[in-house]
Image 1: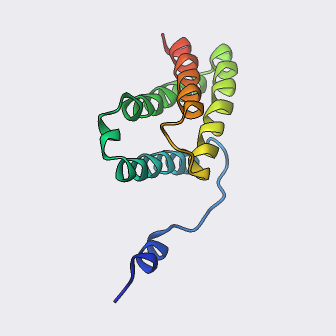
Image 2: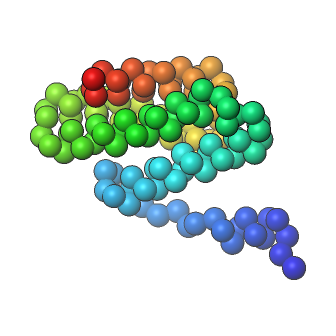
Length: 122
């Protein structure tokens, strides 16, 4: 009979290296954020009602929209996206480190990303 630790070890995907910006990289990023949010929801059941939970999902959608604009060759969008991507990478580091999603540092970072994406999309 498998223990919880054994089951977790069996379901953990091996770390893979992918080219930044590739479809695989985007999927991995998205899945990491979703796993982070799922863990936070388990640890704090009221999180799913939190504006932060919805905000991170919205940020992921805006990020995808910005990638499309950047791909279409808008130089300004590319520059803004590079700046926003640096902030996104910082958020990913916090996710990987297991930072509390309710911390002021995470909330501040999410707000900064939101403002960057809003400025690019609207």
